[in-house]
Image (cartoon, rainbow, N blue to C red; front, side):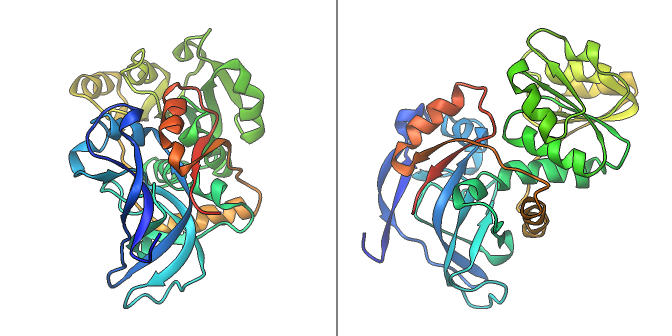
Length: 321
């Protein structure tokens, strides 16, 4: 590649994994306050394939589109005014979300303060698995729900990307953690900090969990009305945070009738929180689960794998050695 181009995976129309096309594109340059990061690895999230299909964040994007928001890499160049980072620094981040960040590529530019120093104890592939999922869990637990010691927290789809971080963060905050997942994941989730596990394939979780202060629903009402069913587990005044799909008028009315609260949620870039999360990872309090990595030009295969469901932790694209 020349100094003005880079490898990337683009889409020119919404559709299935086959629309993901490896090609050579123009390399971005940092504006003032931005940094150019050479991408070593890019995390994959459900919002990626939902957007590829024309859902998710599709309404905010333009073609040709480079998907992806999770990045771990090395600062290549800094724009005017940047004082917090320098070339050679290892960083990770979730830049620009929900606008396009272009993570499925060799280079990404974004404001310096949307990045944080990469956790020193993990490689780039594991660091790239962190930002979107971990920030979602952290901002829900700390900023939205104000979870503290002694609170009871129910997490659905606890073995996934957001879920496995939510379990660990809730444990770190001193909460009593109830996690739903298939039975094969229970021992692992207890190692991560779950106090109780519920096999959603054999047990209606709303019949097994009660007096919950906060529900983090990572499934949504589109699949077996999980958000609506979650209302039955909440204590009076408890809070449901419905992540996929948010809170419909019907769900809001049901929550009000049940005497509980409900809200949707969308994650935001947050370099300061990523610094805190990196500290927890380096201290050994939080582990990062990567089920499988794929080379950049196999992004379509990675999406197919992710869409099949039941991924333990995260999937990651490796971009640069």
